[in-house]
Image 1 (cartoon, rainbow, N blue to C red):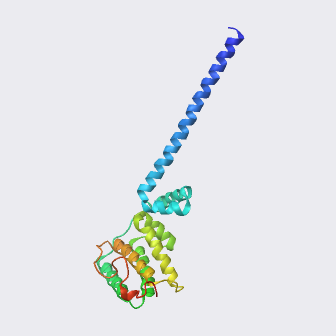
Image 2: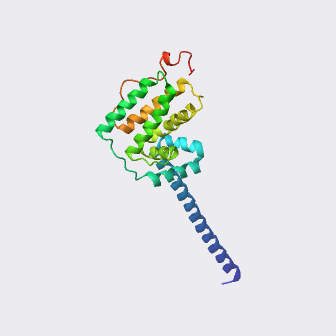
Length: 208
């Protein structure tokens, strides 16, 4: 075999090896992209709107990492049921806060946060501050996590006196949805209902 033939064979072998390596590299890339896509789809299916809210707030990479962290930390969280006696007591307290809203909406919002956070502790949610509660809630009830953040923001702003009646009314509706879900009973057709406050609560649209 002459040198030209040997060189051609060696070149063909090198080219074949390069093609194999290229094909393997492409397979790795494709599999990684599929894994990322499957991971994203799994997180989106698990968290629903909370996935969109978290990604919008943190970006895709950091947002999905945050949701992965929540899954590892709270995925096995077991919640306790509320006893009948406690359920009745909490329900009465909630009715009181709804009635009190007319004369002192800021008080009702503040006490609603305390009522809900206490109920979360009773159910077995971790007691590590608001961020911890919201993260754990996003595992148990992801559809309520973002509205809880909004209600909590209103709760915080009542301390500065910069909250309108309309905003506080909306916060009470958000707290109600969370309260009813955590208490595990149907929503009652009374109190804070509808999409806008009664006229007597906001005679000029949005004043305190």
